[in-house]
Length: 54
Image (cartoon, rainbow, N blue to C red; front, side):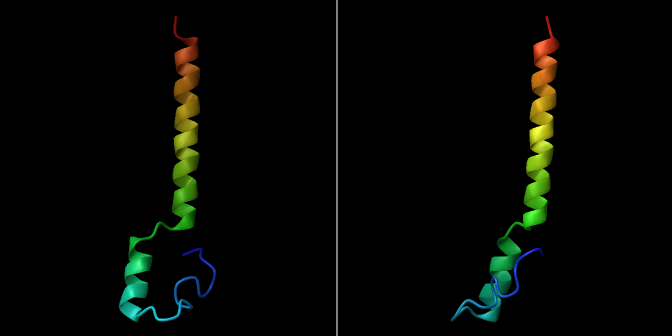
């Protein structure tokens, strides 16, 4: 998932069910980075279009 080994599993006292819940509710870092790239590209594209409009 792009996380360091033990990111969730090395947490003391965290049950297997809690580990799976934490991972299931998390955002994969690569997905978040790509989403930000796309949002940034869309924002720049929209800004350049509005600057060119009369």
